[in-house]
Length: 326
Ligand code: HEC
Ligand code: HEC
Ligand code: HEC
Ligand code: HEC
Ligand code: HEC
Ligand code: HEC
Ligand code: HEC
Ligand code: HEC
Ligand code: HEC
Image 1 (cartoon, rainbow, N blue to C red):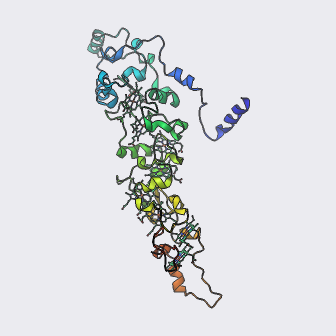
Image 2: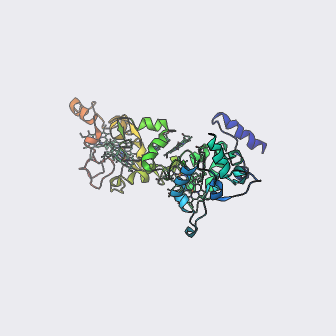
């Protein structure tokens, strides 16, 4: 146990993070005040108009809609997340609220007796949601616990602002701004000369990444980089009769997914891209110079002028091999 502990604390220099507690500790934090009872939304808000707008939004949302008993869904109301509310509204009557209002005083409930949602550790915040959004109920959350967001103390709250409006889901268009708020380097990459048209509204972060975690590295939507890319570029899927070895299995051997200073999202310009792995065409000067400077230049500008089917081809080259020349 001691060994494990010193190992963990030894990592603290790498990543500023709070100690990880056993799950039951987080569970305790979200039980709420043990002396309070559940009173139901109607009693909670009976005396108060302060939260009318919140309630209106909430009732219009998918979670609020579940309040209808016929739905057979778990009941979601204010206290599902904020904890039992009897102490918060104790002694609050319509008359008191109106009397105070007459004197220009706003009456607040004793909200300190509710769960202090904002100050909870991220793991406990997420548990509030996960007690209903189990893996069975929300399949997308299958990899949540092993995902980089959960591991880096990003809870559900920053992405799903429960009270911002009736729409609880993040629309793909809104996701760009949301994601950029924490991922500035991605924002910079999508501003490079060659980039996936994200700002143009044709590609979205969630096309490629699952914000709730995924099976592949970088929380990709599919099991591999290639599968993620060929969702939209099916002509690159193959299999081809003449493959670029297994190089094309990982599109990132040649492309940067967000953006690049080079055209076509390439990691490097041609011919340098290709010359990382190939010698290119040997220029045989020893045997009397079989190649002219003119021709050599042709070879060393854009390899894909001739090797135009660089992603694979079903057509053999003139020598009968697979040289991607047609
Ligand atoms: C699904 C969970 C959930 C439900 C249901 C819910 N809330 Fe909230 N509420 C939250 C979270 C999370 C926050 C804190 C948001 C943040 O981090 O700023 C919050 C914040 C608030 C605040 C503080 C607002 C602010 O701007 O600081 C009020 C008031 C509130 N909720 C009232 C209500 C009322 C009234 C209901 C019932 C109609 C309700 N909530 C239902 C999750 C919920
Ligand atoms: C008491 C149970 C309960 C709690 C707690 C709860 N939810 Fe929900 N939530 C539901 C139900 C039921 C639905 C509607 C059915 C569905 O879409 O799964 C829903 C729907 C949603 C949706 C919309 C899904 C859609 O397709 O439109 C989002 C987003 C969501 N919840 C996020 C949260 C977040 C974030 C929290 C924590 C702050 C939370 N929920 C807490 C039960 C709950
Ligand atoms: C990094 C931001 C982010 C975090 C953190 C996050 N979500 Fe989401 N969530 C999204 C986005 C974006 C969508 C819309 C997904 C889409 O359009 O493909 C979404 C969709 C959903 C939905 C709608 C149903 C579905 O599967 O598409 C539910 C329910 C949900 N999230 C619940 C949660 C819960 C519960 C948590 C915390 C355990 C959480 N989310 C954490 C960004 C986030
Ligand atoms: C076309 C698909 C695609 C889109 C769209 C996309 N990504 Fe990525 N992203 C990837 C791939 C593939 C990787 C893995 C890169 C690697 O291994 O070098 C990655 C890596 C990342 C990483 C980790 C590496 C790094 O650069 O820090 C983050 C963070 C990230 N993406 C965030 C985002 C955000 C935020 C958005 C939306 C603004 C977004 N991505 C849109 C495909 C995409
Ligand atoms: C509240 C801040 C926050 C928001 C909002 C946020 N992220 Fe993250 N994200 C993080 C942190 C922190 C990490 C872990 C550290 C890192 O790799 O940057 C992370 C990691 C990731 C990774 C994994 C990076 C890797 O190296 O493998 C991806 C992919 C990612 N986020 C995508 C998204 C997408 C897509 C959205 C929008 C739906 C989003 N994030 C919104 C904070 C955030
Ligand atoms: C959601 C769909 C989608 C996914 C997933 C996707 N792309 Fe794209 N890609 C596009 C669109 C749209 C364009 C722009 C096409 C245009 O402008 O004609 C594009 C353009 C490109 C271009 C050409 C850029 C240029 O400057 O002409 C390359 C290279 C590319 N994608 C590679 C990839 C790779 C590699 C992946 C996987 C990491 C990927 N794409 C995943 C939709 C997608
Ligand atoms: C060996 C390097 C290499 C690999 C691996 C590679 N590409 Fe490319 N790709 C290129 C080059 C070079 C170009 C530019 C060709 C040109 O300018 O005519 C290109 C262009 C593209 C384009 C835009 C032009 C077109 O043909 O539609 C898309 C889309 C694309 N690649 C997608 C992919 C996908 C998806 C993968 C993974 C399955 C992938 N690439 C793997 C080298 C590669
Ligand atoms: C990541 C390394 C890598 C990159 C980058 C790369 N290749 Fe390849 N290429 C290979 C491998 C491995 C093979 C298969 C082994 C072989 O036959 O040499 C291959 C095969 C080929 C072949 C067929 C060779 C034969 O003998 O059949 C041609 C032509 C080719 N590549 C051209 C290119 C061009 C043009 C580029 C740049 C757009 C490029 N390659 C980028 C690794 C790479
Ligand atoms: C002017 C057209 C042209 C250009 C430009 C060109 N190639 Fe070739 N390449 C060919 C032809 C033709 C073949 C032989 C095809 C055959 O055998 O059927 C070939 C063959 C190859 C081969 C197979 C092995 C070998 O050496 O014969 C590789 C690898 C190769 N090229 C890589 C490259 C690279 C890397 C570049 C850019 C630096 C490039 N080529 C530029 C026309 C070209």
